[in-house]
Image (cartoon, rainbow, N blue to C red; front, side, top):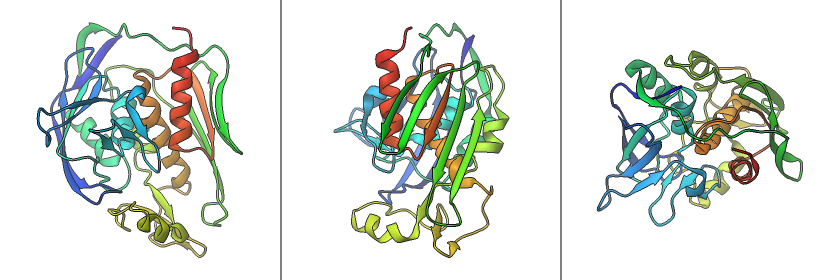
Length: 283
């Protein structure tokens, strides 16, 4: 299979969920075998941060890459690039956090579809991670695992005390790689927005988090229901969890042929599974 990059650049500006800072992102075509990587153009020498598991440094409420030079909340953008077949991309950003935009991956996915993909004249000879037996990690009643399968599928379950969310499950399979955009990601997963719980907001704000969060870029749920309906899907929260999982597992480079199953998991568990896959799988 050939690799693919973007046919043209993509530019978006917005506010970061946790920092509250406005940043500009330019996603540019990149050469074959270069992978997906960030470039901090606001810093001297424009340091590069690879979108790889080894670069993960923080997983509290988002995924951060890099340490002294870092980039935070990368999961929605990376999910869009990986799920829609962009193997190689240079992501230039003038700050430390990817903008949240509308709280989903919808704008990223639509932009990728608009510019299209270009096949690159090189075989995709990257090592394929082969899942031969179940691999899993857990914490209390939360878990995420990878199981041998005939397709790459992501299934997720969540369970909240709030009646408006309660118990939800959803499953989605990525389309086999080709030079065509995966429209199912655009319609089923990308539009699902991040969500928060009303009773946790004050604590998170006092902890220096969600400074850029608002009812315009995140769903908020309380005991009486959603503060800012309507939802895009009846089960929008669990679809968003699949979006996060896809973004975190994109740090493997190529998605293994596996069924990924998660329940009440987190960015931390997602990344633990990715690392365990790299440690244990046969290539």
